[in-house]
Image (cartoon, rainbow, N blue to C red; front, side):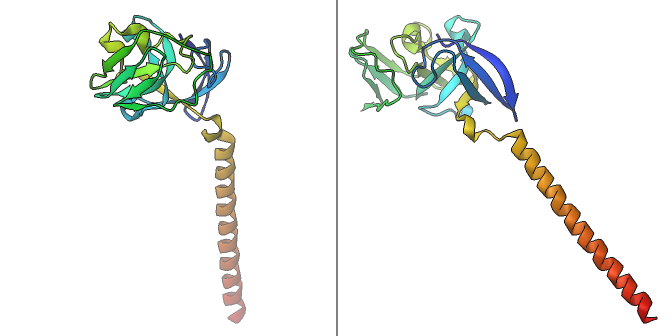
Length: 192
């Protein structure tokens, strides 16, 4: 299971510490993950989300990849190939662990729910391990965040740099206006 522990935050984003191998190689055990707080309404297939696992009987937050959304049909064959709505998924992010055999899965995802899998399929206790509870799905409303590339996070340093630049520009404009007003007053006084 991907159990995460919260860390510090930047500009509303959070840092989570990945404590399992379920999302390897994308997020190795022990790595820090930058998370954008979101609700589940805008989640799409392929997103890596953090969610409350209460639907699975756990009082923790886990991280998994969204494979399917409401009304999608998911079929996983014995060798582990995943089809969504009849199309085989290209999954370059998967952990290369050699042959993987598991019981086949065939699920239609209920509306308002998500079917989730780990990138390290052998190590992940994901939707496949919880098929008896809502076909292994979790509610969209259980989503608390989405993993994002750390480089895309707005830095408070960059924010303050822009604020400083804006303040400097305002100061220069004010100085130019004051100089112009002073010159005009001086010119008016000399003409009299």
